[in-house]
Image (cartoon, rainbow, N blue to C red; front, side, top):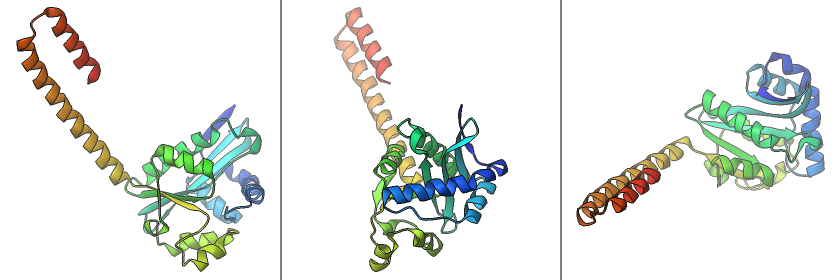
Length: 222
């Protein structure tokens, strides 16, 4: 049975397996996945900032979140799924769980991700992330220092932290809320216009069948 949960103290036992999964994926992909120390992963687990997936007690997936720049930004990192469990939608479930955890813990923060994985990019964009330049991400030096464990770190250095093989993605809750508010306002305008049009037409077209049909349209449209 597959379980996807927020990691807790009891999951510290999986740390070595988590690190092996991350390192193995980095070697196979040949691109950037920053290495992490056991103490770092343990801290994320004990702070309840990790999502862990297991199948009958066996580790099959993991990721963690971290805040940066005085909690103005939050990143989901280290998303990994055991090879034999890929292609089953597990990454999406872990990502969604991490997204909800981020929104719960840091509701005002912008969520961001840097990745070379096309699959991770798609997961993020399905949620609502948008590709952005690195300048729009956190300027917290501690975050970028974490990239030192990546094989592509020299590229980041040489471009003065403006470019790398990774793509930057950002989810800004303020923009999403504004769009939803604009959509609601648009819907209200259309609703008022339809009611006005219905009142005018109902005076011109009297047959009962026509009026009933218009009412049906109004009901299903709004």
